[in-house]
Length: 186
Image (cartoon, rainbow, N blue to C red; front, side, top):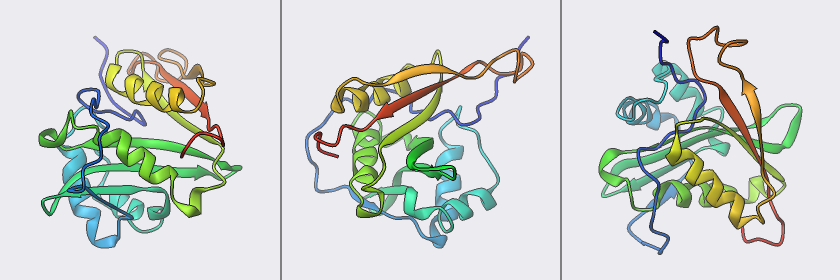
């Protein structure tokens, strides 16, 4: 029997379906004080990989310019962790997408992604990449929506193979690479 682990797969429990604006959401760059709240959010979102809380403190400090935190009613509602690839700073790798269970189905994941990509500090990002397992339909829906918004130029390839890389302990991770169409609204 294969052990199920999740590495870099962005995951949400259901496709976000609403697009309308909602002023009750607050999107911001996380700070060091958010590390524990982010850790708790990710722990509440199986099958996301729960890293050490130290990792989440690093994301909310060292990597915060490429992460977004969503709040509603003074609660942590969602979080996207991402980073610019060191060898390709115009490429943004989305590591995890987490939406608290009570805020799912409200379009939050896509709104966070849009908010992140609209930041002036990320204006030179030309490509978004992420990895997704075959059965993660919510993440496929989220990133296909992003791809559609940017002209359906995305491509999918194997990144980490179930047998070659994971030795049968994890499903294949597919790399979804989405060029951002500069004429599309980021």
